[in-house]
Amino acid sequence: MNISNLAAAPAREVDFAKRVFDLAKKSLRELNQALHHLTPGSNETAWEVLNPKGSHSVAVGVDQPISVDVRGSVGYYCAGMNVGAAITVHGSAGPGVGENMMSGQIVVKGDASQYAGATGRGGLLVIEGNASSRCGISMKGIDIVVHGNIGHMSAFMAQSGNLVVLGDAGDALGDSIYEARLFVRGKVESLGADCIAKEMRPEHIELLQGLLDRAGVTGVKPSEFKRYGSARTLYNFNIDNADAY
Amino acid sequence: MCGIVGLFLKDKALEPRLGAMLSEMLVLLTDRGPDSAGIAIYGATAGNEAKITIQSPRPERDFRGLDVDLAKAVGAPVSVAVKSTHAVIRTNSDKVDAAREALQSLRPDIRIMGAGEAVEIYKEVGLPEAVVERFDVRSMTGTHGIGHTRMATESAVTTMGAHPFSTGADQCLVHNGSLSNHNNVRRELVREGMTFETENDTEVAAAYLSNRMAHGKNLGEALEDTLSDLDGFFTFVVGTKTGFGVVRDPIACKPAVMAETDQYVAFGSEYRALANLPGIENAKVWEPEPATVYFWEH
Image 1 (cartoon, chains in turn orange, green):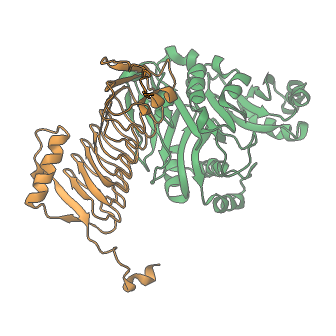
Image 2: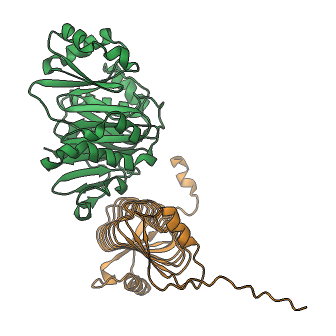
Image 3: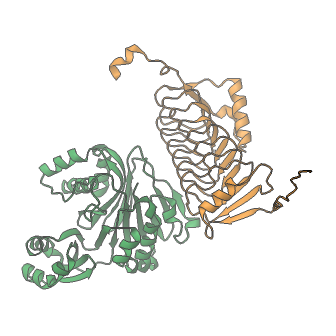
């Protein structure tokens, strides 16, 4: 007897039109579940979210290479843990935008509140306005490009990746930094412990040009930036500092 | 967490809607604090009349005949408008101290929420929606106001532990954060003769501001002083008879967003609180800087 398994699989709804999701009519949970149910090869590659009105956790945990346009300002943790999606906030973002991003791209057209891109491991976060305090705190491989200024304690304990700031940086930039690279075009209010200005070598000019290109920044030359990074004096315990503890 | 809001109207046409707008802002932040909520509204002033907002655990007993008893005690006309557990006493402004003193003996269980020419303060345990409903805050008219929804960390969930805290005549304070040196500051203030109703850290901040102002500082200077003398996390929003102010500690962990248009200046712990304000799409929206005092006045 032949055994076959020809039971018809439900035909996948083919929908090339943009999926529009209105948060005034549907819940945030429905949005995020719909995004999480996407599978590789899905045709639903373009999403638009209306009326976010400061909602928390909009489009967190997306793991497919789709685009999501959020029309308005969002609250905490928008686009956190992103894997591969291109998420654009057409407004400002609350605390923790792009937290722990793995890959993909997040663009915030307005400002971002504190700890933008915190602990991010990969991908590109572009903030077209200003970012607040603790931008890139504990970053671990993410690239962050801020068109405006960043607040105090940015890149605190930053481990790897690149933080590019076209404007100014607040107090204690790069405190206790490991191997992340910081490029600031404007003035730095103060450097944190173990963070120092470093020479811009040709490889840094090239790296920075690549980051500016990816972030769509034009009319700005890498040579206008200063580079900051770790003096590496905190890597090992120094017995001479024992009195400080 | 806690959620705080503030709204300062520039456009007189919005004044009849102040209570409704501020209520909506506060209700939108309900999930930042489910324990208790409160609101301070600055309404119209009437000549030399002053208002004292009082609260009683047994309003039926305490508010009955209070107007007559109090008028006799202070020797001036007194009216008492009851709203649930609270009531607003109106009398001549030079009789406020006498009325406060008389209340202590006439109705010892009554607590004073605040006093001044313009301010009324309502606060209770419960969700913001329940609190604004209970005191019919939505129908209130005014020029500016502040509100708070509390997630308690430093002291018990009680009416007196709710915000706003009065800091002096027509002055009050709401706080998001927690102070770590409030016990020390309280001890110092007690030595200077100040009295406290609760173990709450924010009450200490309020008393601290009153104390600085009693030493001749203006509110702006007193707020500046908090940056060096108060340790811990804070975003404060303060209301005065003619304006409101905002200050954040230098670390500025506690969130804050502001919006300004030709019609108003608004404060919210989050943008959500501001999202339904008129003209917000074109408002100037920004995050107040750490360790910076902001102030608006009529």
